[in-house]
Image (tube, rainbow, N blue to C red; front, side, top):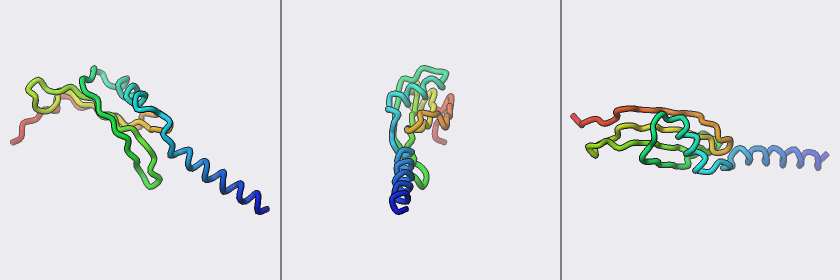
Length: 102
């Protein structure tokens, strides 16, 4: 009975660890985000972030086109890609984000 209990605990721990692994590469996350954007980004920034109590890993991908004036951006999109499954979980696209300070 003890062996069965230890096996069940090990199985639960192993399954939990699988959810926290990073299986998707940074390049795959960029590709996933770029497919959602309706523009061709000139700049790309990627950061691995962990969210939630369990620390689930996500790739935060920022795609942008700098404004011609050098202030702000003509276009910015931000995607959040699950680093374990590769699923796109959030996408925000902002056009004309250049704003002058008042």
